Image 1 (cartoon, one colour):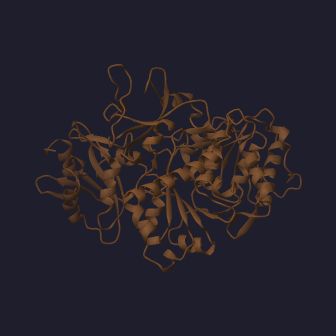
Image 2 (cartoon, one colour; image 1 turned 135 degrees about the vertical axis):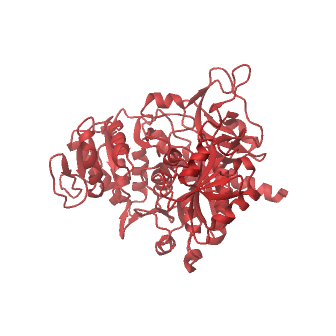
Image 3 (cartoon, helix red, strand yellow; image 1 turned 135 degrees about the horizontal axis):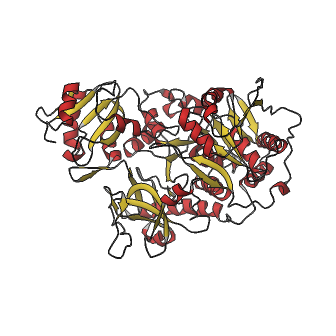
Length: 599
Protein backbone atom coordinates (compact mmCIF):
# COMPACT_ATOMS: atom_id res chain seq x y z
CA UNK A 1 0.00 0.00 0.00
CA UNK A 2 1.35 3.40 -1.02
CA UNK A 3 1.77 6.27 1.48
CA UNK A 4 -1.28 8.21 0.22
CA UNK A 5 -3.57 5.19 0.49
CA UNK A 6 -2.18 4.41 3.93
CA UNK A 7 -2.90 7.96 5.09
CA UNK A 8 -6.42 7.82 3.65
CA UNK A 9 -7.00 4.51 5.45
CA UNK A 10 -5.93 5.96 8.80
CA UNK A 11 -8.15 9.02 8.30
CA UNK A 12 -11.19 6.80 7.64
CA UNK A 13 -10.40 4.66 10.65
CA UNK A 14 -9.81 7.55 13.05
CA UNK A 15 -12.90 9.38 11.79
CA UNK A 16 -15.10 6.35 12.45
CA UNK A 17 -13.49 5.69 15.82
CA UNK A 18 -13.88 9.32 16.91
CA UNK A 19 -17.58 9.40 15.97
CA UNK A 20 -18.21 6.19 17.88
CA UNK A 21 -16.32 7.16 21.01
CA UNK A 22 -17.99 10.56 21.06
CA UNK A 23 -21.46 8.99 21.13
CA UNK A 24 -20.62 6.67 24.03
CA UNK A 25 -18.52 9.09 26.08
CA UNK A 26 -21.20 9.81 28.72
CA UNK A 27 -22.22 6.21 29.42
CA UNK A 28 -21.64 5.46 33.09
CA UNK A 29 -22.62 2.40 35.15
CA UNK A 30 -23.94 4.61 37.96
CA UNK A 31 -25.95 6.99 35.77
CA UNK A 32 -29.74 7.24 36.10
CA UNK A 33 -30.11 8.03 32.38
CA UNK A 34 -31.63 4.81 31.04
CA UNK A 35 -32.10 3.52 27.51
CA UNK A 36 -35.72 4.74 27.51
CA UNK A 37 -34.40 8.24 28.27
CA UNK A 38 -32.28 8.05 25.10
CA UNK A 39 -35.41 7.17 23.13
CA UNK A 40 -37.50 9.93 24.71
CA UNK A 41 -34.78 12.47 23.91
CA UNK A 42 -34.98 11.43 20.22
CA UNK A 43 -38.81 11.62 20.32
CA UNK A 44 -38.71 15.16 21.68
CA UNK A 45 -36.29 16.21 18.94
CA UNK A 46 -37.82 14.35 15.97
CA UNK A 47 -41.45 14.02 17.06
CA UNK A 48 -43.08 14.12 13.63
CA UNK A 49 -40.35 12.37 11.63
CA UNK A 50 -41.19 8.90 10.37
CA UNK A 51 -39.59 6.47 12.80
CA UNK A 52 -40.87 3.12 11.50
CA UNK A 53 -42.36 1.68 8.32
CA UNK A 54 -43.97 -1.74 8.64
CA UNK A 55 -46.27 -3.49 6.15
CA UNK A 56 -47.51 -0.26 4.63
CA UNK A 57 -48.02 1.56 7.93
CA UNK A 58 -45.94 4.57 8.95
CA UNK A 59 -45.31 5.56 12.55
CA UNK A 60 -43.85 8.85 13.69
CA UNK A 61 -41.57 9.12 16.69
CA UNK A 62 -44.51 10.57 18.64
CA UNK A 63 -46.70 7.59 17.71
CA UNK A 64 -44.03 5.04 18.66
CA UNK A 65 -43.66 6.77 22.02
CA UNK A 66 -47.42 6.63 22.56
CA UNK A 67 -47.33 2.88 21.89
CA UNK A 68 -44.47 2.48 24.35
CA UNK A 69 -46.42 4.44 26.96
CA UNK A 70 -49.44 2.17 26.52
CA UNK A 71 -47.29 -0.88 27.27
CA UNK A 72 -46.08 0.91 30.40
CA UNK A 73 -49.69 1.65 31.39
CA UNK A 74 -50.60 -2.02 30.91
CA UNK A 75 -47.71 -3.15 33.11
CA UNK A 76 -48.68 -0.60 35.76
CA UNK A 77 -52.27 -1.85 35.74
CA UNK A 78 -51.03 -5.41 36.31
CA UNK A 79 -49.02 -4.36 39.34
CA UNK A 80 -45.64 -4.96 37.73
CA UNK A 81 -42.76 -2.98 39.19
CA UNK A 82 -39.07 -2.21 38.76
CA UNK A 83 -37.00 -5.39 38.80
CA UNK A 84 -39.76 -7.58 37.34
CA UNK A 85 -39.44 -9.30 33.95
CA UNK A 86 -41.92 -9.69 31.09
CA UNK A 87 -41.24 -12.12 28.25
CA UNK A 88 -41.78 -11.00 24.65
CA UNK A 89 -42.52 -13.84 22.22
CA UNK A 90 -43.25 -12.03 18.98
CA UNK A 91 -42.18 -11.90 15.35
CA UNK A 92 -40.92 -8.64 13.90
CA UNK A 93 -43.80 -6.18 14.09
CA UNK A 94 -44.42 -2.51 14.78
CA UNK A 95 -45.13 -3.04 18.48
CA UNK A 96 -41.89 -4.90 19.25
CA UNK A 97 -39.48 -2.08 20.09
CA UNK A 98 -42.18 0.07 21.78
CA UNK A 99 -43.02 -2.92 24.01
CA UNK A 100 -39.60 -3.26 25.61
CA UNK A 101 -38.95 0.48 25.67
CA UNK A 102 -42.32 1.06 27.36
CA UNK A 103 -41.62 -1.57 30.00
CA UNK A 104 -38.19 -0.07 30.66
CA UNK A 105 -39.91 3.22 31.54
CA UNK A 106 -41.03 1.49 34.73
CA UNK A 107 -37.72 -0.30 35.29
CA UNK A 108 -39.17 -3.61 34.05
CA UNK A 109 -36.86 -5.92 32.08
CA UNK A 110 -37.94 -7.69 28.89
CA UNK A 111 -36.84 -11.21 27.94
CA UNK A 112 -36.63 -11.25 24.13
CA UNK A 113 -37.45 -14.81 23.14
CA UNK A 114 -36.85 -16.30 19.70
CA UNK A 115 -40.32 -16.74 18.20
CA UNK A 116 -39.07 -19.64 16.03
CA UNK A 117 -38.45 -21.85 19.06
CA UNK A 118 -40.70 -24.79 19.90
CA UNK A 119 -40.76 -27.66 22.37
CA UNK A 120 -38.02 -28.04 24.96
CA UNK A 121 -36.00 -25.00 23.80
CA UNK A 122 -39.03 -22.70 24.10
CA UNK A 123 -39.93 -24.13 27.50
CA UNK A 124 -36.33 -23.63 28.65
CA UNK A 125 -36.23 -19.98 27.57
CA UNK A 126 -39.56 -19.15 29.18
CA UNK A 127 -38.54 -20.90 32.39
CA UNK A 128 -35.19 -19.16 32.85
CA UNK A 129 -36.68 -15.76 32.02
CA UNK A 130 -38.34 -15.67 35.48
CA UNK A 131 -41.24 -13.86 33.84
CA UNK A 132 -44.82 -14.25 35.06
CA UNK A 133 -46.33 -12.56 32.01
CA UNK A 134 -45.74 -13.24 28.31
CA UNK A 135 -46.67 -10.76 25.58
CA UNK A 136 -47.28 -12.74 22.41
CA UNK A 137 -49.54 -13.06 19.35
CA UNK A 138 -51.82 -15.64 17.81
CA UNK A 139 -49.01 -16.82 15.51
CA UNK A 140 -46.82 -17.84 18.46
CA UNK A 141 -49.60 -19.08 20.74
CA UNK A 142 -49.72 -22.56 19.18
CA UNK A 143 -46.12 -23.25 20.16
CA UNK A 144 -46.86 -22.14 23.72
CA UNK A 145 -49.88 -24.40 24.02
CA UNK A 146 -47.80 -27.50 23.37
CA UNK A 147 -45.38 -26.83 26.23
CA UNK A 148 -47.35 -24.85 28.82
CA UNK A 149 -48.35 -27.93 30.86
CA UNK A 150 -44.69 -28.80 31.43
CA UNK A 151 -43.58 -25.35 32.62
CA UNK A 152 -42.45 -25.15 36.26
CA UNK A 153 -44.82 -22.26 37.03
CA UNK A 154 -47.98 -20.85 35.46
CA UNK A 155 -47.69 -17.91 33.10
CA UNK A 156 -50.24 -15.36 31.96
CA UNK A 157 -50.32 -14.86 28.20
CA UNK A 158 -51.26 -11.52 26.67
CA UNK A 159 -52.11 -11.52 22.96
CA UNK A 160 -51.75 -8.18 21.18
CA UNK A 161 -53.58 -9.10 17.97
CA UNK A 162 -56.82 -7.07 17.64
CA UNK A 163 -60.00 -9.07 18.13
CA UNK A 164 -58.44 -11.93 20.08
CA UNK A 165 -61.02 -13.82 22.10
CA UNK A 166 -59.79 -14.10 25.69
CA UNK A 167 -59.74 -17.35 27.69
CA UNK A 168 -58.34 -18.37 31.09
CA UNK A 169 -54.65 -17.41 31.23
CA UNK A 170 -54.93 -16.08 27.68
CA UNK A 171 -55.84 -12.41 27.73
CA UNK A 172 -56.28 -9.75 25.09
CA UNK A 173 -53.85 -6.85 25.36
CA UNK A 174 -55.80 -4.21 23.45
CA UNK A 175 -53.47 -1.29 22.81
CA UNK A 176 -56.52 0.79 21.81
CA UNK A 177 -58.03 0.35 25.27
CA UNK A 178 -58.85 3.86 26.58
CA UNK A 179 -57.53 2.97 30.03
CA UNK A 180 -54.03 2.46 28.58
CA UNK A 181 -52.83 6.04 28.60
CA UNK A 182 -50.57 7.20 25.74
CA UNK A 183 -48.90 9.76 28.04
CA UNK A 184 -45.44 9.12 29.42
CA UNK A 185 -45.19 7.71 32.91
CA UNK A 186 -43.43 10.09 35.27
CA UNK A 187 -39.69 9.58 35.33
CA UNK A 188 -39.98 9.32 39.11
CA UNK A 189 -41.51 5.87 38.53
CA UNK A 190 -38.01 4.56 37.82
CA UNK A 191 -36.25 6.41 40.62
CA UNK A 192 -33.38 4.35 41.93
CA UNK A 193 -32.80 2.55 38.64
CA UNK A 194 -29.26 2.82 37.28
CA UNK A 195 -27.71 1.93 33.96
CA UNK A 196 -26.10 -1.14 35.57
CA UNK A 197 -29.62 -2.59 36.07
CA UNK A 198 -30.95 -5.13 33.55
CA UNK A 199 -33.06 -3.77 30.68
CA UNK A 200 -33.22 -6.88 28.48
CA UNK A 201 -32.41 -10.55 28.40
CA UNK A 202 -31.19 -11.56 24.96
CA UNK A 203 -30.65 -15.25 24.33
CA UNK A 204 -27.65 -16.85 22.69
CA UNK A 205 -28.40 -18.64 19.44
CA UNK A 206 -28.16 -22.16 20.86
CA UNK A 207 -25.99 -23.54 18.04
CA UNK A 208 -24.46 -26.14 20.37
CA UNK A 209 -27.10 -26.55 23.07
CA UNK A 210 -29.87 -24.76 24.92
CA UNK A 211 -29.84 -20.96 24.62
CA UNK A 212 -28.47 -18.92 27.53
CA UNK A 213 -30.00 -15.63 28.67
CA UNK A 214 -27.43 -12.83 28.42
CA UNK A 215 -28.06 -9.91 30.77
CA UNK A 216 -28.25 -6.66 28.81
CA UNK A 217 -28.06 -3.75 31.21
CA UNK A 218 -29.22 -0.27 30.24
CA UNK A 219 -25.53 0.59 29.93
CA UNK A 220 -24.89 -2.27 27.50
CA UNK A 221 -27.99 -1.42 25.45
CA UNK A 222 -26.80 2.17 25.28
CA UNK A 223 -23.35 1.02 24.22
CA UNK A 224 -24.87 -0.94 21.31
CA UNK A 225 -27.32 1.71 20.21
CA UNK A 226 -25.22 4.84 20.70
CA UNK A 227 -22.05 3.35 19.21
CA UNK A 228 -23.83 2.34 16.00
CA UNK A 229 -25.61 5.68 15.88
CA UNK A 230 -22.10 7.14 15.65
CA UNK A 231 -20.26 4.46 13.67
CA UNK A 232 -22.76 4.39 10.79
CA UNK A 233 -22.83 8.19 10.50
CA UNK A 234 -26.59 7.90 10.13
CA UNK A 235 -28.73 11.04 10.16
CA UNK A 236 -32.40 12.06 10.12
CA UNK A 237 -32.62 11.53 6.35
CA UNK A 238 -31.46 7.91 6.50
CA UNK A 239 -33.75 4.91 6.10
CA UNK A 240 -32.35 1.64 7.43
CA UNK A 241 -33.68 -1.63 6.05
CA UNK A 242 -33.98 -4.32 8.73
CA UNK A 243 -35.03 -7.91 8.07
CA UNK A 244 -33.11 -9.31 11.03
CA UNK A 245 -35.03 -10.54 14.08
CA UNK A 246 -35.59 -7.88 16.71
CA UNK A 247 -35.04 -10.42 19.49
CA UNK A 248 -31.33 -10.34 18.66
CA UNK A 249 -28.82 -7.53 19.24
CA UNK A 250 -27.68 -6.95 15.65
CA UNK A 251 -31.10 -5.99 14.34
CA UNK A 252 -32.89 -5.06 17.55
CA UNK A 253 -30.21 -2.81 19.05
CA UNK A 254 -27.50 -2.02 16.47
CA UNK A 255 -29.90 -1.49 13.56
CA UNK A 256 -32.61 0.18 15.62
CA UNK A 257 -30.15 2.44 17.43
CA UNK A 258 -28.57 3.64 14.19
CA UNK A 259 -31.93 4.95 13.05
CA UNK A 260 -33.93 5.89 16.12
CA UNK A 261 -31.20 7.77 18.00
CA UNK A 262 -30.53 9.91 14.91
CA UNK A 263 -34.06 10.79 13.80
CA UNK A 264 -33.92 8.31 10.92
CA UNK A 265 -36.36 5.62 9.80
CA UNK A 266 -36.39 1.87 10.22
CA UNK A 267 -38.06 -0.03 7.39
CA UNK A 268 -38.90 -3.29 9.12
CA UNK A 269 -39.89 -6.61 7.60
CA UNK A 270 -41.13 -9.76 9.31
CA UNK A 271 -38.66 -11.97 7.48
CA UNK A 272 -35.87 -11.86 4.95
CA UNK A 273 -36.80 -12.57 1.33
CA UNK A 274 -33.96 -12.76 -1.20
CA UNK A 275 -36.33 -12.46 -4.15
CA UNK A 276 -38.03 -9.30 -2.83
CA UNK A 277 -35.05 -7.71 -1.14
CA UNK A 278 -33.91 -5.22 -3.77
CA UNK A 279 -37.38 -4.15 -4.88
CA UNK A 280 -38.26 -3.54 -1.25
CA UNK A 281 -35.10 -1.49 -0.66
CA UNK A 282 -35.75 0.55 -3.81
CA UNK A 283 -39.47 1.14 -3.17
CA UNK A 284 -38.78 2.41 0.36
CA UNK A 285 -35.79 4.57 -0.58
CA UNK A 286 -33.54 2.81 1.92
CA UNK A 287 -30.02 4.16 2.34
CA UNK A 288 -28.59 1.54 4.72
CA UNK A 289 -28.97 -2.19 5.32
CA UNK A 290 -28.13 -4.11 8.49
CA UNK A 291 -26.99 -7.64 7.67
CA UNK A 292 -25.92 -11.02 8.92
CA UNK A 293 -23.35 -12.43 6.51
CA UNK A 294 -25.44 -15.33 5.25
CA UNK A 295 -28.08 -12.91 3.95
CA UNK A 296 -25.48 -11.48 1.61
CA UNK A 297 -24.67 -14.98 0.36
CA UNK A 298 -28.34 -15.60 -0.37
CA UNK A 299 -28.50 -12.36 -2.37
CA UNK A 300 -25.40 -13.22 -4.37
CA UNK A 301 -26.92 -16.62 -5.22
CA UNK A 302 -29.96 -14.94 -6.81
CA UNK A 303 -30.12 -14.54 -10.60
CA UNK A 304 -28.96 -11.11 -11.82
CA UNK A 305 -31.71 -8.50 -12.08
CA UNK A 306 -31.97 -4.88 -13.29
CA UNK A 307 -32.85 -3.92 -9.71
CA UNK A 308 -29.48 -5.14 -8.42
CA UNK A 309 -27.92 -1.68 -8.76
CA UNK A 310 -30.99 0.59 -8.87
CA UNK A 311 -30.99 1.25 -5.12
CA UNK A 312 -29.76 4.16 -2.99
CA UNK A 313 -27.85 2.14 -0.39
CA UNK A 314 -24.69 3.90 0.75
CA UNK A 315 -23.78 1.54 3.59
CA UNK A 316 -24.27 -2.08 4.60
CA UNK A 317 -23.28 -2.85 8.18
CA UNK A 318 -23.34 -6.07 10.14
CA UNK A 319 -21.28 -9.14 10.93
CA UNK A 320 -20.38 -12.53 9.55
CA UNK A 321 -19.79 -11.52 5.92
CA UNK A 322 -17.39 -14.17 4.66
CA UNK A 323 -14.40 -13.12 2.56
CA UNK A 324 -15.45 -15.19 -0.48
CA UNK A 325 -18.80 -13.32 -0.59
CA UNK A 326 -17.67 -9.83 0.38
CA UNK A 327 -16.14 -8.52 -2.84
CA UNK A 328 -18.69 -10.18 -5.13
CA UNK A 329 -21.53 -8.70 -3.07
CA UNK A 330 -20.04 -5.23 -3.03
CA UNK A 331 -19.11 -5.19 -6.72
CA UNK A 332 -22.27 -6.78 -8.12
CA UNK A 333 -24.68 -4.65 -6.10
CA UNK A 334 -22.57 -1.46 -6.11
CA UNK A 335 -22.73 -0.88 -2.35
CA UNK A 336 -20.25 1.96 -1.71
CA UNK A 337 -19.31 1.00 1.87
CA UNK A 338 -19.43 -2.16 3.94
CA UNK A 339 -18.81 -1.83 7.67
CA UNK A 340 -18.23 -5.20 9.29
CA UNK A 341 -18.11 -5.33 13.07
CA UNK A 342 -17.39 -7.92 15.72
CA UNK A 343 -19.19 -8.32 19.02
CA UNK A 344 -21.09 -10.85 21.08
CA UNK A 345 -24.36 -10.36 22.92
CA UNK A 346 -22.90 -11.08 26.33
CA UNK A 347 -19.23 -10.13 25.89
CA UNK A 348 -17.06 -7.03 26.17
CA UNK A 349 -14.97 -7.46 23.01
CA UNK A 350 -16.14 -5.28 20.14
CA UNK A 351 -14.40 -3.78 17.13
CA UNK A 352 -15.20 -2.17 13.79
CA UNK A 353 -13.74 -2.44 10.32
CA UNK A 354 -14.33 1.21 9.51
CA UNK A 355 -12.33 1.32 6.28
CA UNK A 356 -13.85 -1.69 4.51
CA UNK A 357 -10.87 -4.06 4.37
CA UNK A 358 -12.47 -7.17 2.75
CA UNK A 359 -12.77 -10.08 5.16
CA UNK A 360 -11.61 -8.23 8.28
CA UNK A 361 -13.96 -8.21 11.28
CA UNK A 362 -12.33 -5.21 12.91
CA UNK A 363 -9.11 -3.36 13.47
CA UNK A 364 -6.88 -2.19 16.29
CA UNK A 365 -3.87 -0.40 14.75
CA UNK A 366 -0.51 -1.05 16.42
CA UNK A 367 -0.29 2.56 17.61
CA UNK A 368 -3.58 2.17 19.55
CA UNK A 369 -3.00 -1.30 20.94
CA UNK A 370 -2.59 -0.02 24.50
CA UNK A 371 -5.96 1.74 24.28
CA UNK A 372 -7.90 -1.41 23.39
CA UNK A 373 -7.98 -4.23 25.94
CA UNK A 374 -8.41 -7.10 23.46
CA UNK A 375 -5.71 -9.73 23.05
CA UNK A 376 -5.23 -13.03 21.23
CA UNK A 377 -3.92 -15.88 23.39
CA UNK A 378 -2.45 -19.12 22.10
CA UNK A 379 -4.96 -21.95 22.19
CA UNK A 380 -4.73 -25.74 22.46
CA UNK A 381 -7.47 -27.21 20.27
CA UNK A 382 -7.40 -30.62 21.94
CA UNK A 383 -7.77 -29.40 25.53
CA UNK A 384 -9.84 -26.40 24.36
CA UNK A 385 -7.89 -24.21 26.77
CA UNK A 386 -5.40 -21.37 26.35
CA UNK A 387 -1.69 -22.19 26.48
CA UNK A 388 0.17 -20.98 29.58
CA UNK A 389 3.85 -20.44 30.26
CA UNK A 390 5.89 -21.82 33.16
CA UNK A 391 4.54 -19.04 35.41
CA UNK A 392 0.92 -19.86 34.63
CA UNK A 393 0.37 -16.74 32.50
CA UNK A 394 -1.27 -17.01 29.08
CA UNK A 395 0.97 -16.89 26.02
CA UNK A 396 0.07 -14.10 23.60
CA UNK A 397 -0.03 -14.82 19.86
CA UNK A 398 2.44 -13.52 17.33
CA UNK A 399 1.33 -11.62 14.22
CA UNK A 400 -0.60 -13.97 11.94
CA UNK A 401 -0.90 -16.70 14.58
CA UNK A 402 -4.46 -17.82 15.43
CA UNK A 403 -5.62 -17.64 19.03
CA UNK A 404 -8.65 -17.00 21.20
CA UNK A 405 -9.78 -13.37 21.50
CA UNK A 406 -10.18 -12.20 25.08
CA UNK A 407 -11.25 -8.86 26.57
CA UNK A 408 -10.15 -7.28 29.85
CA UNK A 409 -12.96 -7.06 32.42
CA UNK A 410 -13.30 -3.78 34.33
CA UNK A 411 -16.25 -1.97 35.91
CA UNK A 412 -16.75 0.67 33.26
CA UNK A 413 -18.85 1.05 30.12
CA UNK A 414 -16.35 -0.32 27.61
CA UNK A 415 -15.00 -3.29 29.59
CA UNK A 416 -18.00 -4.33 31.66
CA UNK A 417 -19.04 -7.98 31.59
CA UNK A 418 -22.59 -8.66 32.80
CA UNK A 419 -22.72 -12.33 31.85
CA UNK A 420 -25.79 -14.55 31.85
CA UNK A 421 -28.75 -15.12 34.13
CA UNK A 422 -26.98 -18.40 34.99
CA UNK A 423 -24.07 -17.50 37.30
CA UNK A 424 -22.20 -20.75 36.61
CA UNK A 425 -22.37 -20.12 32.85
CA UNK A 426 -21.12 -16.57 33.42
CA UNK A 427 -18.13 -17.82 35.42
CA UNK A 428 -17.12 -20.29 32.68
CA UNK A 429 -16.57 -17.37 30.30
CA UNK A 430 -13.99 -15.70 32.56
CA UNK A 431 -10.28 -16.37 32.06
CA UNK A 432 -7.89 -15.34 34.83
CA UNK A 433 -4.14 -14.68 35.01
CA UNK A 434 -3.92 -13.74 31.34
CA UNK A 435 -1.39 -10.90 31.21
CA UNK A 436 -0.64 -10.70 34.93
CA UNK A 437 -1.64 -12.43 38.14
CA UNK A 438 -5.13 -11.59 39.34
CA UNK A 439 -6.52 -10.10 36.11
CA UNK A 440 -9.81 -11.23 34.58
CA UNK A 441 -10.66 -11.46 30.89
CA UNK A 442 -13.79 -12.43 28.96
CA UNK A 443 -13.41 -15.48 26.71
CA UNK A 444 -15.08 -14.84 23.36
CA UNK A 445 -14.87 -18.48 22.30
CA UNK A 446 -13.68 -17.27 18.88
CA UNK A 447 -10.33 -17.97 17.24
CA UNK A 448 -8.88 -15.05 15.29
CA UNK A 449 -5.63 -13.87 13.78
CA UNK A 450 -4.30 -10.34 13.44
CA UNK A 451 -2.08 -8.97 10.68
CA UNK A 452 0.71 -6.39 10.94
CA UNK A 453 -1.69 -3.52 10.17
CA UNK A 454 -3.95 -4.48 13.07
CA UNK A 455 -6.80 -6.09 11.12
CA UNK A 456 -8.51 -9.01 12.85
CA UNK A 457 -9.76 -11.98 10.82
CA UNK A 458 -12.14 -14.64 12.09
CA UNK A 459 -10.68 -18.15 11.98
CA UNK A 460 -13.23 -20.40 13.67
CA UNK A 461 -15.47 -20.91 16.65
CA UNK A 462 -13.90 -22.92 19.48
CA UNK A 463 -15.41 -26.37 19.35
CA UNK A 464 -15.80 -26.09 15.58
CA UNK A 465 -12.08 -26.29 14.92
CA UNK A 466 -11.06 -29.94 15.19
CA UNK A 467 -7.83 -31.93 15.06
CA UNK A 468 -7.12 -34.55 12.38
CA UNK A 469 -3.80 -36.21 11.52
CA UNK A 470 -2.09 -34.03 14.10
CA UNK A 471 -3.26 -30.79 12.48
CA UNK A 472 -5.88 -28.20 13.44
CA UNK A 473 -8.66 -27.84 10.87
CA UNK A 474 -10.66 -24.62 10.71
CA UNK A 475 -14.21 -25.42 9.64
CA UNK A 476 -14.75 -21.83 8.53
CA UNK A 477 -11.75 -21.80 6.21
CA UNK A 478 -12.64 -25.19 4.69
CA UNK A 479 -16.25 -24.07 4.17
CA UNK A 480 -15.01 -20.97 2.35
CA UNK A 481 -13.04 -23.14 -0.09
CA UNK A 482 -15.94 -25.52 -0.69
CA UNK A 483 -18.30 -22.59 -1.27
CA UNK A 484 -16.21 -21.52 -4.27
CA UNK A 485 -16.80 -24.83 -6.05
CA UNK A 486 -19.33 -24.44 -8.91
CA UNK A 487 -22.87 -25.25 -7.89
CA UNK A 488 -22.40 -25.10 -4.12
CA UNK A 489 -25.07 -22.90 -2.55
CA UNK A 490 -24.05 -23.53 1.07
CA UNK A 491 -21.45 -25.56 2.94
CA UNK A 492 -21.35 -26.43 6.63
CA UNK A 493 -18.16 -28.17 7.81
CA UNK A 494 -17.67 -30.12 11.05
CA UNK A 495 -15.68 -33.02 12.51
CA UNK A 496 -16.95 -36.56 13.18
CA UNK A 497 -15.50 -39.48 15.12
CA UNK A 498 -14.50 -42.71 13.33
CA UNK A 499 -14.35 -45.68 15.65
CA UNK A 500 -11.26 -45.55 17.86
CA UNK A 501 -9.22 -43.25 15.61
CA UNK A 502 -7.68 -40.20 17.21
CA UNK A 503 -9.19 -36.84 16.44
CA UNK A 504 -12.15 -36.13 14.19
CA UNK A 505 -12.42 -36.49 10.44
CA UNK A 506 -13.76 -33.67 8.31
CA UNK A 507 -17.31 -33.79 6.98
CA UNK A 508 -19.18 -31.24 4.90
CA UNK A 509 -22.93 -30.82 4.52
CA UNK A 510 -23.47 -29.26 1.09
CA UNK A 511 -26.61 -27.72 -0.34
CA UNK A 512 -26.21 -28.13 -4.11
CA UNK A 513 -27.37 -25.62 -6.67
CA UNK A 514 -27.40 -25.53 -10.45
CA UNK A 515 -24.36 -27.19 -11.99
CA UNK A 516 -23.13 -29.04 -8.91
CA UNK A 517 -21.29 -32.27 -9.73
CA UNK A 518 -19.92 -34.50 -6.99
CA UNK A 519 -17.58 -36.12 -9.53
CA UNK A 520 -15.36 -33.04 -9.81
CA UNK A 521 -15.42 -32.01 -6.16
CA UNK A 522 -12.55 -34.21 -4.94
CA UNK A 523 -10.12 -33.05 -7.66
CA UNK A 524 -10.98 -29.45 -6.80
CA UNK A 525 -10.39 -29.99 -3.08
CA UNK A 526 -7.07 -31.77 -3.75
CA UNK A 527 -5.92 -28.61 -5.54
CA UNK A 528 -7.22 -26.21 -2.91
CA UNK A 529 -6.70 -27.90 0.46
CA UNK A 530 -3.99 -29.90 2.25
CA UNK A 531 -4.81 -33.56 2.79
CA UNK A 532 -5.64 -33.26 6.48
CA UNK A 533 -8.19 -30.47 5.79
CA UNK A 534 -10.06 -32.16 2.96
CA UNK A 535 -13.45 -33.50 4.08
CA UNK A 536 -13.45 -37.28 4.25
CA UNK A 537 -17.24 -37.30 4.10
CA UNK A 538 -19.81 -35.33 2.13
CA UNK A 539 -23.48 -35.07 3.05
CA UNK A 540 -25.92 -33.71 0.49
CA UNK A 541 -28.49 -31.55 2.27
CA UNK A 542 -31.54 -29.89 0.67
CA UNK A 543 -31.16 -27.09 3.22
CA UNK A 544 -28.80 -26.45 6.09
CA UNK A 545 -30.49 -25.78 9.41
CA UNK A 546 -29.77 -22.37 10.86
CA UNK A 547 -30.73 -20.49 13.98
CA UNK A 548 -33.03 -17.47 13.87
CA UNK A 549 -29.95 -15.32 13.30
CA UNK A 550 -28.75 -17.47 10.39
CA UNK A 551 -25.93 -19.23 12.23
CA UNK A 552 -25.37 -22.83 11.18
CA UNK A 553 -26.45 -25.50 13.62
CA UNK A 554 -23.95 -28.37 13.79
CA UNK A 555 -24.98 -30.38 16.82
CA UNK A 556 -27.48 -32.56 14.93
CA UNK A 557 -25.11 -33.04 11.98
CA UNK A 558 -22.32 -34.19 14.29
CA UNK A 559 -24.70 -36.59 16.01
CA UNK A 560 -25.81 -38.14 12.70
CA UNK A 561 -22.21 -38.53 11.53
CA UNK A 562 -21.80 -40.56 8.34
CA UNK A 563 -24.29 -43.31 9.25
CA UNK A 564 -26.69 -43.90 6.31
CA UNK A 565 -29.25 -45.30 8.76
CA UNK A 566 -29.56 -41.83 10.30
CA UNK A 567 -29.42 -39.72 7.15
CA UNK A 568 -32.04 -39.74 4.39
CA UNK A 569 -29.88 -37.84 1.89
CA UNK A 570 -26.88 -39.13 -0.03
CA UNK A 571 -23.62 -39.61 1.88
CA UNK A 572 -20.19 -39.92 0.24
CA UNK A 573 -16.81 -41.19 1.44
CA UNK A 574 -13.43 -40.26 -0.01
CA UNK A 575 -12.32 -43.86 -0.62
CA UNK A 576 -8.49 -44.03 -0.65
CA UNK A 577 -8.29 -46.94 -3.12
CA UNK A 578 -10.43 -45.16 -5.72
CA UNK A 579 -9.37 -41.56 -5.03
CA UNK A 580 -13.00 -40.56 -5.43
CA UNK A 581 -16.09 -39.80 -3.39
CA UNK A 582 -18.23 -42.94 -3.39
CA UNK A 583 -21.75 -43.43 -2.09
CA UNK A 584 -21.87 -44.82 1.46
CA UNK A 585 -23.92 -47.99 1.76
CA UNK A 586 -24.61 -49.83 5.05
CA UNK A 587 -21.81 -52.29 4.19
CA UNK A 588 -19.32 -49.51 3.41
CA UNK A 589 -20.31 -47.71 6.60
CA UNK A 590 -19.52 -50.84 8.61
CA UNK A 591 -16.13 -51.17 6.90
CA UNK A 592 -15.20 -47.55 7.67
CA UNK A 593 -16.35 -47.85 11.26
CA UNK A 594 -14.41 -51.09 11.77
CA UNK A 595 -11.13 -49.72 10.40
CA UNK A 596 -11.01 -51.42 6.99
CA UNK A 597 -9.34 -48.36 5.43
CA UNK A 598 -6.05 -46.70 6.25
CA UNK A 599 -7.12 -43.13 6.93
